[in-house]
Image (cartoon, rainbow, N blue to C red; front, top):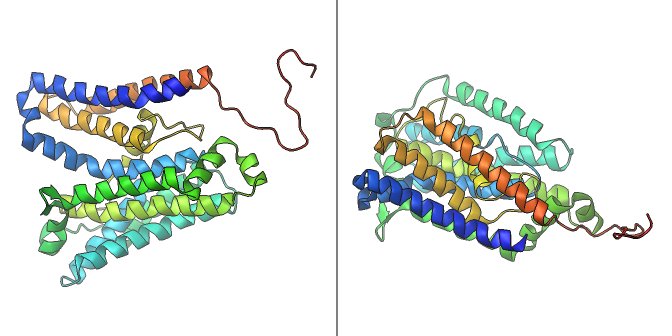
Length: 333
């Protein structure tokens, strides 16, 4: 299992580089600095959402409402900015992130404290949040001419040569890496995913951890909601429709186990980059975008097979609870 883990991320990184080079051989414009810069910028939202989804999946959960949370927060941010043109962008971003946090905490409370199945809860809230986008906007669009210039310009405004969008993504990557590797909160999430009952037995506050894990997922989705509508200068009822499946696919491709307890920041980032390369390469190669779903599905199946193979080679060892015994091979049951 250890060798599999060590090989997985470098292999995925090589695949991303190889894919970029192969597309570049077919169409050299893909390797131009401008094209690669656009690829990096386009991947940022998926990277950020995949990172928090990774933390959710590590706990044996799933957040299907992440794109709906993005849409609702993004619509709220666009409507707020349109109604108050003089409002600082920082305030709009704070409102978007806070609204996403609130929506995520609803998921976390239902899952953590009421012990409801994550897939059922987030499927339900996905529909509710999507409906609220329509209720909030009345079905109307917020177009670019209704949004303040600063609201639209912020994500792509450059700082030290890189757009704000890229710097925010880098900050999220660093924060998630620190949480996952160097905090008790992050270690507890892996313990919950590996053995939920054992985690409770040793005193991990699982309900509280799940509450804030889903809250964190919602907060990042809310921030991405502002970045999405500002990046594309439009807000409408079907923002990011179906994007939750792309986010989950990025995690699976990056080696995050749906069974919980296994996943890394590097893997989630590489999985998101891999899908972003595919999405940006198809138009360059003049391939129908409908093939993107088929290619993504095929890659997911391969990733699942690799994950299953890795789990068979070295399954996780769970320590027995106090008072129980674990028979060893050849011993009497």
